[in-house]
Length: 575
Image 1 (cartoon, rainbow, N blue to C red):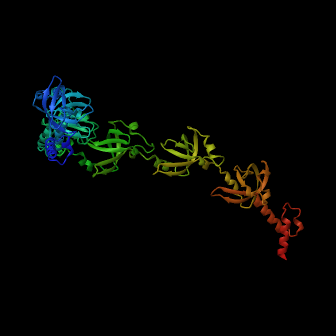
Image 2: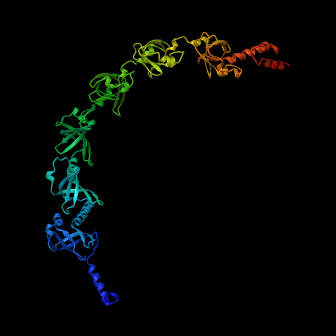
Image 3: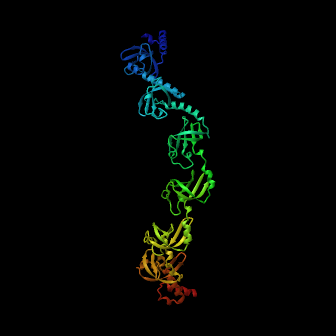
């Protein structure tokens, strides 16, 4: 024991040097892969010798066999293992051969992924969404999605099972240690090289003969060319006529000539056309004139109108607004069917946009122009109520296919206009006067009250300040509602116009039914407005009394409480 107490002695220094030289040969560290030499083999375990460890690591013999290392289970063979713990709670060394194999395999996968190199593997089993692939070099397991098995759908993959083949690494999750591979990319890369060479054969303008119709889609038709390439003819390139679906023109298996119109070497696509092999019918557009009637054929009906043909391949648009003069938001489906031949007028020819617009209604007389000629403003017309809403009537005038507008304010001079509107129903016959015609805006306005006597004419022989007799119809807080004798109209006398004296200007003084006199304060025949006032009549009478009687006592018997005071003022002014 004395030798260890004296650390400065020569023997201690030699022992320390010897110990350090022995431990430095092997770098022992948890979490690293180390090589272990098989020292002993039993029925269940394999014992390893690792320099630097105080005890021998032990491996399950079945683990080595499952990893395909059965041939290496011999004394003296070296096996890589992952050192998990140098010493556990039982004082033993924990190592794993399977984890070491995974780590070494993962490093190889990472290297191949970074270099974008294919790896060799084999499909060992199926799983949800795809298959499991085993890396042949390391035994690492990877996932092969079903969409990446081949470049075309496969119903049976039994011929691919356990066959060594190339795979492309498409995704690596270093955190979780997951790898995703693709067989499809390997297949496509070979096909891509071959397809690029095929694409180089074709140039824009080439004519391809005997191309076979292979399949349809909503946007075009696919043709198989020279047993080496599939090309697309877009729906718009099938015909100059409007085509709804390729099956209207082609049948599967038919052969047609095509013209190459585009070559995309990056996408490896060739676009072709069938219609460009025939003359363009738009070149004949010079044969057609604007504002002239032509017979067209309806080829397709849409929500916004219809497409029609002037001749084979020369398509025009008939918008819904050009279907009828009188019908609003009319549907082409209700008027025409595909295949119908109808008369139309060409309204627009745009050569740059290759667009021709036509009108069906222009082939007929504008009923609003006809109405204006037949029934000018001021004419009395007869019609039938064909529609009604909360504020107006729509009247069909005689045999013309037009509806005239009759507002409730033009129904009567009397009563409430909305109440008067309620008296009319669909089918009623009425007479009215034409008030306004706007043929360009397709509007006609008529009035019913304009052909009736105007009760306001009662005021024609009346003038401002004239005294009239009225009957009180009703009273309210705002004033009096009165009706002049001999007139059919009611007027309001405002509370402020009931009397000169504010104390007497009370509507409650009257119960209704009384006959009283008042004066006309305002009269406007253009606006049909008349203002009546009792206060004005009192002021007029008061003024007349002052002018007629000149002494103080002469006004004592008059019904004006302030008249004597006014007379005093007048006498003072004279002095």
